Length: 101
Image (cartoon, rainbow, N blue to C red; front, side, top):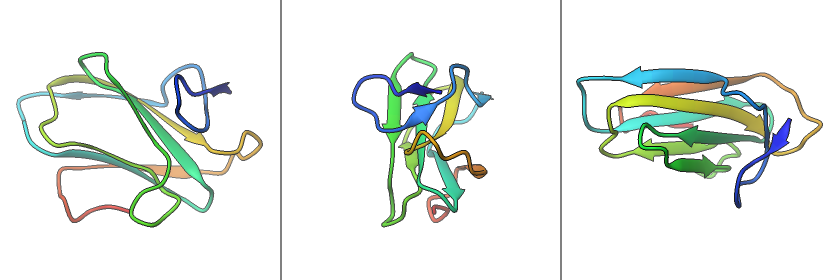
């Protein structure tokens, strides 16, 4: 596992855990993670911008929102805040604003 780029907290693998392609739709695109452990989320958007998040919604679960998500490929890493933790986690992807951790 590698430490995040720049000032992000946590540890992720070298390769993305997921890749998705968004086409033909604009508007909200939300990524969030649920787990029994403290998780972290890292995303590279289709324009090559990097986003990272640790906690959100008063939980230890990260959320990253794209309010007007660009079309194209999103590379997604789900990681752990603590290097030694390797618990399972679930990635959620939604366009519904009321869905969050």
